[in-house]
Image (cartoon, rainbow, N blue to C red; front, top):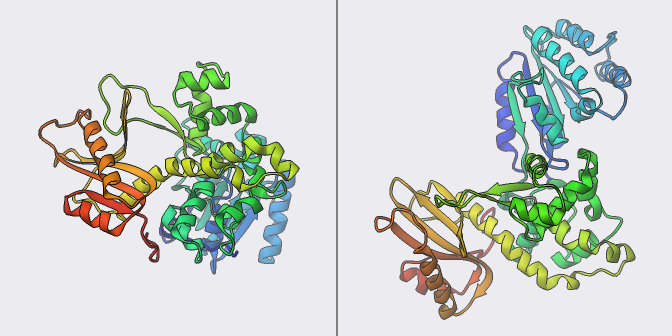
Length: 462
Protein backbone atom coordinates (compact mmCIF):
# COMPACT_ATOMS: atom_id res chain seq x y z
CA UNK A 1 0.00 0.00 0.00
CA UNK A 2 1.31 3.48 -0.84
CA UNK A 3 1.93 5.63 2.21
CA UNK A 4 0.08 8.90 1.80
CA UNK A 5 1.12 12.18 3.37
CA UNK A 6 -1.86 12.77 5.60
CA UNK A 7 -3.18 15.02 8.34
CA UNK A 8 -0.10 17.20 8.73
CA UNK A 9 -1.74 20.41 7.51
CA UNK A 10 -1.39 22.12 10.87
CA UNK A 11 2.27 21.16 11.19
CA UNK A 12 3.07 22.30 7.64
CA UNK A 13 1.17 25.55 8.26
CA UNK A 14 3.25 26.33 11.36
CA UNK A 15 6.51 25.73 9.51
CA UNK A 16 5.34 27.74 6.48
CA UNK A 17 4.49 30.68 8.74
CA UNK A 18 8.06 30.73 10.01
CA UNK A 19 9.39 30.30 6.50
CA UNK A 20 7.44 33.38 5.45
CA UNK A 21 9.28 35.56 7.97
CA UNK A 22 12.15 35.97 5.49
CA UNK A 23 14.67 36.01 8.34
CA UNK A 24 16.85 33.35 9.94
CA UNK A 25 14.85 30.69 11.77
CA UNK A 26 15.79 27.68 13.88
CA UNK A 27 13.14 24.94 13.85
CA UNK A 28 13.25 21.92 16.16
CA UNK A 29 11.14 18.92 15.05
CA UNK A 30 10.96 15.69 17.05
CA UNK A 31 8.77 12.70 17.72
CA UNK A 32 8.94 8.94 18.06
CA UNK A 33 10.34 6.85 15.26
CA UNK A 34 8.09 6.10 12.25
CA UNK A 35 5.73 8.94 13.14
CA UNK A 36 6.23 10.72 9.80
CA UNK A 37 8.77 13.46 10.63
CA UNK A 38 10.87 12.90 7.53
CA UNK A 39 7.79 12.92 5.30
CA UNK A 40 6.73 16.19 6.96
CA UNK A 41 10.10 17.80 6.21
CA UNK A 42 10.18 16.53 2.64
CA UNK A 43 6.64 17.77 2.08
CA UNK A 44 7.63 21.21 3.37
CA UNK A 45 10.80 21.55 1.25
CA UNK A 46 9.10 20.50 -1.99
CA UNK A 47 9.87 23.06 -4.72
CA UNK A 48 11.99 25.14 -2.31
CA UNK A 49 15.73 25.74 -2.33
CA UNK A 50 16.75 23.24 0.30
CA UNK A 51 19.47 20.89 1.48
CA UNK A 52 18.32 17.75 3.28
CA UNK A 53 20.90 15.71 5.21
CA UNK A 54 20.32 12.43 7.06
CA UNK A 55 22.77 11.95 9.94
CA UNK A 56 24.46 8.64 10.64
CA UNK A 57 26.04 7.23 13.79
CA UNK A 58 29.60 8.17 12.76
CA UNK A 59 32.25 10.32 14.38
CA UNK A 60 31.37 14.00 14.11
CA UNK A 61 34.47 14.70 12.01
CA UNK A 62 33.41 12.06 9.49
CA UNK A 63 29.84 13.38 9.47
CA UNK A 64 31.04 16.98 8.93
CA UNK A 65 33.03 15.89 5.88
CA UNK A 66 30.08 13.93 4.50
CA UNK A 67 27.78 16.88 5.17
CA UNK A 68 30.03 19.27 3.23
CA UNK A 69 30.57 16.84 0.35
CA UNK A 70 26.82 16.27 -0.03
CA UNK A 71 26.09 20.01 -0.02
CA UNK A 72 28.73 20.74 -2.65
CA UNK A 73 27.40 17.97 -4.85
CA UNK A 74 23.74 18.93 -4.45
CA UNK A 75 24.31 22.63 -5.24
CA UNK A 76 27.20 22.10 -7.66
CA UNK A 77 29.47 24.44 -5.69
CA UNK A 78 32.84 24.17 -4.00
CA UNK A 79 32.82 25.24 -0.38
CA UNK A 80 35.78 24.56 1.88
CA UNK A 81 35.20 24.47 5.62
CA UNK A 82 37.07 23.08 8.61
CA UNK A 83 33.90 22.50 10.58
CA UNK A 84 30.17 23.25 10.65
CA UNK A 85 30.70 26.79 11.97
CA UNK A 86 32.85 27.57 8.93
CA UNK A 87 30.27 26.00 6.66
CA UNK A 88 27.37 28.11 7.98
CA UNK A 89 29.49 31.30 7.88
CA UNK A 90 30.30 30.60 4.24
CA UNK A 91 26.77 29.81 3.08
CA UNK A 92 25.44 32.72 5.15
CA UNK A 93 27.56 35.01 3.00
CA UNK A 94 27.12 33.20 -0.31
CA UNK A 95 23.32 32.88 0.03
CA UNK A 96 22.89 36.17 1.93
CA UNK A 97 19.94 37.41 -0.11
CA UNK A 98 18.38 34.01 -0.80
CA UNK A 99 16.11 31.87 1.36
CA UNK A 100 17.92 28.58 1.95
CA UNK A 101 16.63 25.64 3.98
CA UNK A 102 19.14 23.37 5.73
CA UNK A 103 17.34 20.35 7.20
CA UNK A 104 19.38 17.98 9.38
CA UNK A 105 17.44 14.76 10.05
CA UNK A 106 18.21 12.33 12.91
CA UNK A 107 20.15 15.11 14.62
CA UNK A 108 19.82 13.09 17.83
CA UNK A 109 22.49 10.70 16.50
CA UNK A 110 25.01 13.53 16.68
CA UNK A 111 23.80 14.58 20.11
CA UNK A 112 24.16 11.04 21.42
CA UNK A 113 27.78 10.90 20.33
CA UNK A 114 28.92 14.35 21.50
CA UNK A 115 26.02 16.16 23.12
CA UNK A 116 27.92 19.01 24.80
CA UNK A 117 30.09 19.74 21.78
CA UNK A 118 27.21 19.69 19.29
CA UNK A 119 24.92 21.75 21.53
CA UNK A 120 27.60 24.42 22.02
CA UNK A 121 28.52 24.36 18.34
CA UNK A 122 24.94 24.94 17.24
CA UNK A 123 24.42 27.59 19.93
CA UNK A 124 27.24 29.56 18.28
CA UNK A 125 25.76 28.95 14.82
CA UNK A 126 22.28 30.09 15.89
CA UNK A 127 23.44 33.07 17.99
CA UNK A 128 26.38 34.40 15.99
CA UNK A 129 26.11 33.21 12.40
CA UNK A 130 22.45 32.91 11.41
CA UNK A 131 21.27 36.43 12.40
CA UNK A 132 21.38 38.69 9.37
CA UNK A 133 21.00 35.74 6.99
CA UNK A 134 17.93 34.07 5.48
CA UNK A 135 18.98 30.56 6.46
CA UNK A 136 16.11 28.38 7.61
CA UNK A 137 17.70 25.71 9.82
CA UNK A 138 15.73 22.58 10.75
CA UNK A 139 17.02 19.91 13.11
CA UNK A 140 14.96 16.77 13.55
CA UNK A 141 15.32 13.67 15.70
CA UNK A 142 13.60 10.46 16.74
CA UNK A 143 15.28 9.92 20.10
CA UNK A 144 12.66 11.88 22.00
CA UNK A 145 14.41 12.14 25.36
CA UNK A 146 17.61 13.30 23.64
CA UNK A 147 15.81 15.92 21.55
CA UNK A 148 13.79 17.16 24.52
CA UNK A 149 17.04 17.63 26.44
CA UNK A 150 17.72 20.53 24.05
CA UNK A 151 14.75 22.30 25.63
CA UNK A 152 16.19 21.97 29.15
CA UNK A 153 17.26 25.18 30.88
CA UNK A 154 20.89 24.10 31.28
CA UNK A 155 21.34 23.16 27.61
CA UNK A 156 23.22 25.72 25.48
CA UNK A 157 20.39 25.64 22.92
CA UNK A 158 17.69 26.40 25.49
CA UNK A 159 15.29 29.04 24.19
CA UNK A 160 16.98 29.26 20.78
CA UNK A 161 14.40 27.41 18.69
CA UNK A 162 11.93 29.78 17.03
CA UNK A 163 9.58 26.83 16.51
CA UNK A 164 9.42 23.59 18.51
CA UNK A 165 7.25 20.95 16.90
CA UNK A 166 6.52 17.57 18.43
CA UNK A 167 4.96 15.34 15.78
CA UNK A 168 2.19 13.21 17.26
CA UNK A 169 0.35 10.09 16.02
CA UNK A 170 -2.58 10.50 13.64
CA UNK A 171 -6.07 10.59 15.09
CA UNK A 172 -8.39 7.67 14.42
CA UNK A 173 -10.49 9.63 11.94
CA UNK A 174 -7.45 10.60 9.87
CA UNK A 175 -5.88 7.14 10.11
CA UNK A 176 -9.07 5.81 8.51
CA UNK A 177 -8.11 7.64 5.31
CA UNK A 178 -5.37 5.07 4.69
CA UNK A 179 -8.02 2.47 3.92
CA UNK A 180 -10.94 2.42 1.47
CA UNK A 181 -12.13 -1.18 1.80
CA UNK A 182 -12.22 -1.74 5.56
CA UNK A 183 -15.55 -1.43 7.35
CA UNK A 184 -15.76 0.50 10.59
CA UNK A 185 -15.30 -2.66 12.67
CA UNK A 186 -11.94 -3.45 11.07
CA UNK A 187 -10.90 0.22 11.15
CA UNK A 188 -11.29 0.25 14.92
CA UNK A 189 -9.37 -3.00 15.25
CA UNK A 190 -6.52 -1.70 13.09
CA UNK A 191 -6.26 1.49 15.14
CA UNK A 192 -6.26 -0.40 18.42
CA UNK A 193 -3.34 -2.52 17.16
CA UNK A 194 -1.04 0.01 15.47
CA UNK A 195 -2.45 3.37 16.56
CA UNK A 196 -1.83 6.45 14.47
CA UNK A 197 1.71 5.59 13.38
CA UNK A 198 1.79 6.11 9.57
CA UNK A 199 4.61 3.64 8.91
CA UNK A 200 2.69 0.91 10.77
CA UNK A 201 -0.63 1.70 9.13
CA UNK A 202 0.87 1.13 5.69
CA UNK A 203 1.80 -2.42 6.71
CA UNK A 204 -1.90 -3.32 6.74
CA UNK A 205 -3.56 -4.25 3.46
CA UNK A 206 -7.33 -3.69 3.27
CA UNK A 207 -7.63 -6.44 0.66
CA UNK A 208 -7.25 -8.84 3.59
CA UNK A 209 -9.31 -9.11 6.78
CA UNK A 210 -7.95 -7.64 9.98
CA UNK A 211 -7.23 -11.13 11.32
CA UNK A 212 -5.30 -12.06 8.17
CA UNK A 213 -3.28 -8.86 8.47
CA UNK A 214 -2.29 -9.71 12.05
CA UNK A 215 -1.13 -13.16 10.97
CA UNK A 216 0.89 -11.65 8.10
CA UNK A 217 2.53 -8.91 10.21
CA UNK A 218 2.63 -9.22 14.01
CA UNK A 219 2.68 -13.01 13.92
CA UNK A 220 5.45 -13.17 11.32
CA UNK A 221 8.95 -13.27 12.87
CA UNK A 222 10.43 -11.59 9.78
CA UNK A 223 8.07 -8.62 9.81
CA UNK A 224 8.88 -5.19 11.26
CA UNK A 225 5.76 -5.19 13.47
CA UNK A 226 6.95 -8.36 15.22
CA UNK A 227 9.89 -6.72 16.99
CA UNK A 228 9.93 -2.98 16.28
CA UNK A 229 8.77 -2.15 19.82
CA UNK A 230 11.72 -3.95 21.35
CA UNK A 231 14.09 -2.42 18.79
CA UNK A 232 12.85 1.09 19.62
CA UNK A 233 13.49 0.57 23.33
CA UNK A 234 16.98 -0.75 22.65
CA UNK A 235 17.82 2.15 20.35
CA UNK A 236 16.61 4.91 22.65
CA UNK A 237 17.16 3.69 26.21
CA UNK A 238 20.18 2.62 28.23
CA UNK A 239 18.25 0.04 30.24
CA UNK A 240 15.71 -1.23 27.71
CA UNK A 241 14.70 -4.33 29.64
CA UNK A 242 13.96 -2.38 32.81
CA UNK A 243 11.62 -0.16 30.79
CA UNK A 244 10.15 -3.22 29.08
CA UNK A 245 9.39 -4.80 32.45
CA UNK A 246 7.64 -1.62 33.59
CA UNK A 247 5.58 -1.46 30.40
CA UNK A 248 4.64 -5.14 30.74
CA UNK A 249 3.25 -4.63 34.22
CA UNK A 250 1.25 -1.54 33.25
CA UNK A 251 -0.13 -3.45 30.26
CA UNK A 252 -1.20 -6.27 32.59
CA UNK A 253 -3.10 -3.94 34.90
CA UNK A 254 -0.59 -2.50 37.38
CA UNK A 255 -1.53 1.18 37.49
CA UNK A 256 -0.14 2.70 40.69
CA UNK A 257 3.46 3.31 41.73
CA UNK A 258 3.36 0.61 44.39
CA UNK A 259 1.81 -1.99 42.06
CA UNK A 260 4.23 -1.26 39.21
CA UNK A 261 7.22 -1.29 41.58
CA UNK A 262 6.21 -4.57 43.20
CA UNK A 263 5.56 -6.44 39.95
CA UNK A 264 8.45 -5.01 37.89
CA UNK A 265 10.85 -5.21 40.87
CA UNK A 266 12.03 -1.65 40.28
CA UNK A 267 12.58 0.21 43.55
CA UNK A 268 9.71 2.61 44.18
CA UNK A 269 12.14 5.48 44.80
CA UNK A 270 13.74 5.01 41.37
CA UNK A 271 10.54 4.20 39.49
CA UNK A 272 9.34 7.81 38.87
CA UNK A 273 12.39 8.65 36.73
CA UNK A 274 11.73 5.62 34.49
CA UNK A 275 8.04 6.49 34.23
CA UNK A 276 8.91 10.07 33.31
CA UNK A 277 11.06 8.89 30.40
CA UNK A 278 8.26 6.64 29.15
CA UNK A 279 5.83 9.56 29.43
CA UNK A 280 8.15 11.81 27.42
CA UNK A 281 8.30 9.11 24.75
CA UNK A 282 4.50 9.11 24.57
CA UNK A 283 4.26 5.45 25.56
CA UNK A 284 2.42 5.97 28.86
CA UNK A 285 0.48 8.72 30.59
CA UNK A 286 -0.54 9.44 34.15
CA UNK A 287 -4.26 10.08 34.57
CA UNK A 288 -6.35 11.56 37.35
CA UNK A 289 -10.14 11.41 37.68
CA UNK A 290 -11.78 14.17 35.65
CA UNK A 291 -13.42 15.17 38.96
CA UNK A 292 -11.04 14.60 41.84
CA UNK A 293 -12.20 13.98 45.38
CA UNK A 294 -10.19 15.82 48.01
CA UNK A 295 -8.91 12.55 49.45
CA UNK A 296 -7.96 11.17 46.01
CA UNK A 297 -4.48 12.49 45.18
CA UNK A 298 -2.94 9.55 43.38
CA UNK A 299 -3.13 9.12 39.64
CA UNK A 300 -2.91 5.92 37.64
CA UNK A 301 -0.65 5.01 34.73
CA UNK A 302 -1.89 3.76 31.40
CA UNK A 303 -0.30 2.61 28.12
CA UNK A 304 -1.03 5.30 25.51
CA UNK A 305 0.69 3.89 22.43
CA UNK A 306 -1.67 1.37 20.82
CA UNK A 307 1.11 -0.41 18.93
CA UNK A 308 3.09 -0.99 22.13
CA UNK A 309 -0.05 -1.98 24.02
CA UNK A 310 -1.05 -4.58 21.42
CA UNK A 311 2.54 -5.80 21.08
CA UNK A 312 2.93 -6.27 24.84
CA UNK A 313 -0.34 -8.19 25.25
CA UNK A 314 -0.35 -10.33 22.13
CA UNK A 315 3.11 -10.46 20.54
CA UNK A 316 5.77 -10.25 23.24
CA UNK A 317 3.83 -12.76 25.35
CA UNK A 318 3.72 -15.26 22.46
CA UNK A 319 7.20 -14.62 21.10
CA UNK A 320 8.29 -18.27 21.14
CA UNK A 321 5.12 -19.47 19.40
CA UNK A 322 5.51 -16.80 16.71
CA UNK A 323 9.13 -17.74 16.11
CA UNK A 324 8.06 -21.39 15.78
CA UNK A 325 5.38 -20.38 13.28
CA UNK A 326 2.50 -21.86 15.30
CA UNK A 327 0.75 -18.62 16.30
CA UNK A 328 -2.63 -17.64 14.79
CA UNK A 329 -5.05 -14.84 15.57
CA UNK A 330 -7.67 -17.37 16.71
CA UNK A 331 -5.56 -17.95 19.85
CA UNK A 332 -6.12 -14.39 21.05
CA UNK A 333 -9.55 -13.67 19.51
CA UNK A 334 -11.55 -13.55 22.77
CA UNK A 335 -8.96 -11.62 24.74
CA UNK A 336 -8.46 -9.22 21.84
CA UNK A 337 -12.16 -8.35 21.84
CA UNK A 338 -11.88 -7.40 25.52
CA UNK A 339 -8.76 -5.40 24.76
CA UNK A 340 -10.58 -3.44 22.03
CA UNK A 341 -13.25 -2.58 24.58
CA UNK A 342 -10.68 -0.88 26.79
CA UNK A 343 -9.06 1.09 23.95
CA UNK A 344 -12.49 2.01 22.57
CA UNK A 345 -12.95 4.30 25.57
CA UNK A 346 -10.14 6.52 24.21
CA UNK A 347 -11.78 6.57 20.78
CA UNK A 348 -15.11 7.58 22.28
CA UNK A 349 -13.37 10.49 23.97
CA UNK A 350 -11.79 11.49 20.65
CA UNK A 351 -15.15 11.37 18.86
CA UNK A 352 -16.67 13.77 21.39
CA UNK A 353 -13.67 16.13 21.32
CA UNK A 354 -13.71 16.22 17.50
CA UNK A 355 -17.50 16.64 17.54
CA UNK A 356 -18.22 13.43 15.66
CA UNK A 357 -20.64 12.90 18.56
CA UNK A 358 -22.31 16.18 19.50
CA UNK A 359 -23.32 16.97 23.06
CA UNK A 360 -26.20 19.32 23.98
CA UNK A 361 -23.75 21.72 25.67
CA UNK A 362 -20.21 23.01 25.25
CA UNK A 363 -18.00 20.97 27.56
CA UNK A 364 -14.77 22.25 29.09
CA UNK A 365 -13.30 19.05 30.55
CA UNK A 366 -13.67 15.42 29.61
CA UNK A 367 -12.26 12.18 30.98
CA UNK A 368 -12.71 9.07 33.08
CA UNK A 369 -13.85 9.14 36.71
CA UNK A 370 -13.24 6.69 39.53
CA UNK A 371 -13.43 6.73 43.29
CA UNK A 372 -12.98 3.69 45.54
CA UNK A 373 -14.97 0.87 43.85
CA UNK A 374 -16.98 3.19 41.57
CA UNK A 375 -15.98 3.96 37.97
CA UNK A 376 -17.54 5.84 35.04
CA UNK A 377 -16.04 5.46 31.58
CA UNK A 378 -16.48 9.04 30.41
CA UNK A 379 -17.68 12.32 31.86
CA UNK A 380 -17.90 15.64 30.01
CA UNK A 381 -18.66 18.77 32.00
CA UNK A 382 -18.82 22.54 32.07
CA UNK A 383 -18.21 24.23 35.43
CA UNK A 384 -19.70 27.55 34.31
CA UNK A 385 -23.05 26.20 33.14
CA UNK A 386 -23.02 23.33 35.66
CA UNK A 387 -23.88 20.83 32.92
CA UNK A 388 -22.50 17.30 33.01
CA UNK A 389 -22.83 14.22 30.80
CA UNK A 390 -22.16 10.67 32.02
CA UNK A 391 -21.37 7.88 29.53
CA UNK A 392 -20.85 4.15 29.56
CA UNK A 393 -18.63 3.09 26.66
CA UNK A 394 -19.15 -0.44 25.34
CA UNK A 395 -17.59 -2.29 22.43
CA UNK A 396 -20.86 -4.15 22.17
CA UNK A 397 -23.94 -4.42 19.94
CA UNK A 398 -27.21 -3.44 21.65
CA UNK A 399 -30.25 -4.90 19.90
CA UNK A 400 -32.59 -4.91 22.92
CA UNK A 401 -33.73 -1.77 24.68
CA UNK A 402 -33.95 -3.59 28.01
CA UNK A 403 -30.19 -4.30 27.96
CA UNK A 404 -29.31 -0.69 27.15
CA UNK A 405 -31.69 0.64 29.79
CA UNK A 406 -30.06 -1.58 32.41
CA UNK A 407 -26.66 -0.03 31.59
CA UNK A 408 -28.08 3.49 31.87
CA UNK A 409 -29.77 2.77 35.20
CA UNK A 410 -26.48 1.47 36.60
CA UNK A 411 -24.79 4.61 35.28
CA UNK A 412 -27.33 6.80 37.08
CA UNK A 413 -26.66 4.98 40.33
CA UNK A 414 -22.91 5.55 40.02
CA UNK A 415 -23.37 9.21 39.09
CA UNK A 416 -24.85 9.86 42.53
CA UNK A 417 -21.36 9.31 43.99
CA UNK A 418 -19.83 12.04 41.80
CA UNK A 419 -19.39 15.01 44.12
CA UNK A 420 -19.78 17.98 41.76
CA UNK A 421 -22.35 20.81 42.11
CA UNK A 422 -24.72 18.44 43.86
CA UNK A 423 -28.41 19.41 43.46
CA UNK A 424 -27.40 22.30 41.18
CA UNK A 425 -26.20 20.50 38.06
CA UNK A 426 -28.01 19.59 34.87
CA UNK A 427 -27.37 15.91 34.14
CA UNK A 428 -27.30 13.93 30.90
CA UNK A 429 -26.82 10.18 30.58
CA UNK A 430 -25.85 8.09 27.61
CA UNK A 431 -24.16 5.15 25.91
CA UNK A 432 -21.40 5.08 23.31
CA UNK A 433 -21.30 1.64 21.69
CA UNK A 434 -20.06 -0.35 18.76
CA UNK A 435 -23.61 -0.62 17.44
CA UNK A 436 -27.08 0.17 18.72
CA UNK A 437 -30.19 -1.04 16.91
CA UNK A 438 -32.14 1.70 15.13
CA UNK A 439 -35.32 1.19 17.16
CA UNK A 440 -33.39 1.04 20.42
CA UNK A 441 -31.50 4.19 19.52
CA UNK A 442 -34.64 6.14 18.61
CA UNK A 443 -36.51 5.03 21.74
CA UNK A 444 -33.66 5.99 24.07
CA UNK A 445 -33.19 9.35 22.38
CA UNK A 446 -36.90 10.06 22.71
CA UNK A 447 -36.43 9.62 26.46
CA UNK A 448 -33.66 12.23 26.43
CA UNK A 449 -30.63 9.93 26.56
CA UNK A 450 -27.43 10.60 24.59
CA UNK A 451 -26.94 7.55 22.38
CA UNK A 452 -24.08 7.19 19.89
CA UNK A 453 -22.59 4.29 17.96
CA UNK A 454 -20.02 3.80 15.25
CA UNK A 455 -22.66 3.80 12.53
CA UNK A 456 -21.61 3.84 8.91
CA UNK A 457 -18.34 5.30 7.70
CA UNK A 458 -18.94 8.50 5.75
CA UNK A 459 -15.81 10.19 4.46
CA UNK A 460 -13.73 11.05 7.51
CA UNK A 461 -16.60 10.58 9.92
CA UNK A 462 -18.13 7.55 11.54
